[in-house]
Image (cartoon, rainbow, N blue to C red; front, side, top):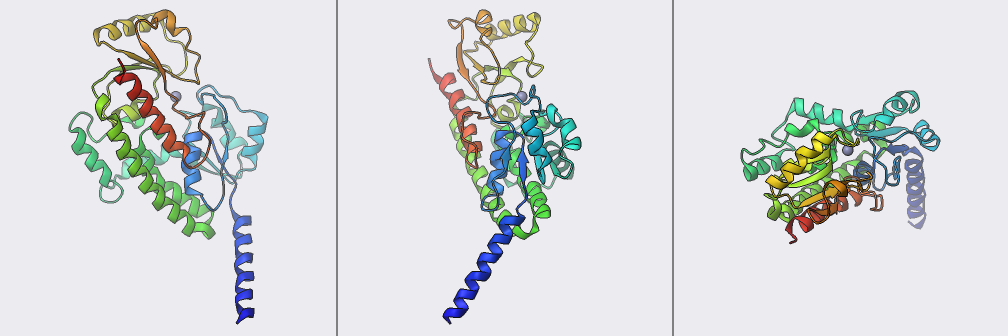
Length: 312
Ligand SMILES: [Zn+2]
């Protein structure tokens, strides 16, 4: 009997070692996506984050260390060519042995095949809440900052899990379990944020770069305009003049800057006596990387918006 228990333990230990060895090397471009993938690969492997620190993916360049990381990757997860432009070439020329998971194209695929019966229970609720304001909340897939809409993230969980299972079938059961847990967490996160943002729906505000329409449209907020329309370049004088007039007409009280962009110059256009300045970080750069980073980042956005827009 004792002998039998012992041999079972040995077999289990051997199986565990095998799983650990077989786990794929996963590389993820930006922090919020790294967080989602970390949640899906929990108890299998910790993915590597490519873009560390405070940097905008729009203007990043590939460093030698990052090239090496890509070269050794079995799986690379990125948003797509509309966001991490610095990865377009290396994805094919450097990450040669990797399976590439491109989230923006998975989302487009999902859109074409629209299945209203399975994953979309929540969306129907959402539709009821906001009526005709913005249809089913899906016009916005043109905006590449797709992680800022938790409904889009929820839609990505199944296809990304499928890819992980194809690449690493030995750990299929763990991925499935993680996938089910993440879906529940995302649904809870979404409803908590809805409640948090309820009171600021009709309060217009300015943002620095055009990242937030997925978030704004999903939660029915009133973002009036972005200062840098071309993602990270300084806007024209004409555009600024137009925004100044909008600010006055609509009685805008808050302007949200971002840690990824130098925006000190804005204070010569809108002095602090005219507008309150607050910060939004669409990447959650200062939050520790890991499975909880995404939820924290989304809470931070909601808190920052709500703090500034409700303060006198
Ligand atoms: Zn952006």
